[in-house]
Length: 404
Picture 1 (cartoon, rainbow, N blue to C red):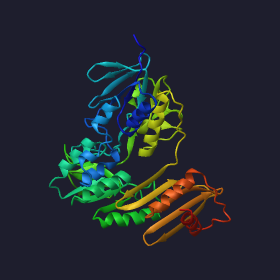
Picture 2: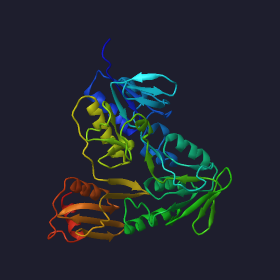
Picture 3: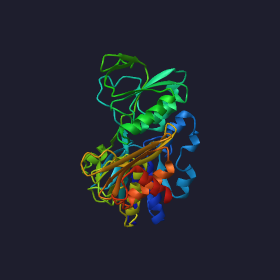
Picture 4: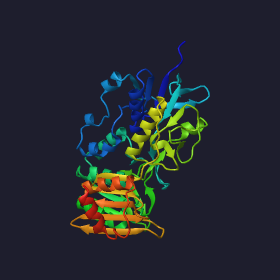
């Protein structure tokens, strides 16, 4: 018998698909099997809120048409759940009891929504928006509805709230932190964002303590820290994600916060790689689309026998939230001495530049996408900004304007 030459990729998000793309680019002969427990072809998870709002049609969500997988001889199996990974004998066991052998395995199993430990979280009417099936469910529940509650003022929470508001549904948004998007913004930038959010008719409450979900079997609303009850039988929770690690853990693969990966995206098990939201690289769980894409590409290239490394990327976000361009990167709220912080606001635009030892270590920019990309490139390349020449936000703005 010929020696087995098969790569199985578990998970068909952007990390898994990027791995399959990279493998096929470098190896035209290897058998590629892409397993997804979702019942839809791989899609742009980032675009789910645009689909909810009606801005994007369903057929435009998918990463590739079905024929693409056929043409590239990628055996895509949707609605396929992996129950067990056997590292010693190199096979995966599926929900139907069948076993499939592999010569290399890539775990790109993603993450699941995190639900804060709020009493009553198991009640009906409380949901997250992580998958296309979730988006379909939400649209069905929103039909004919006047209002709902959203919990979570991060990127996804704001995008979900915006999508719902654009359908004409009144949204009450609650964020436990003192300001919106606390992982990406400082209080000043968040205050500008809040004005835009509220202009859409979304009522925002920051620093919100939610004591419990009220109701019997089904949710009827929430009880806040001060005892106030806010009534709604539909609550959408967007409080972050938790990596899916149980498959790896039960297989004896080393797990920390996520599945531990080296720079080649190898796990601790021979022949097993990992990528995407489930992967922990150098102690970091990125939870970002671009990081998952790059990790998937690296895992795929190494699975195909090509030397490739992922050495990390600055934690950054460039996106449009609630209709405004927003950019954040690096250390924008340093807690140690020795940092310089320079900010500038004008005509709805906001700029923050944070420096240390002659380098730009962090930045927030609102309302100027072109400037954001220039700043990101400077941070990535560790461009020199001598302190005696760059002592104000205006100096940085002049530099990035002249070096467009």
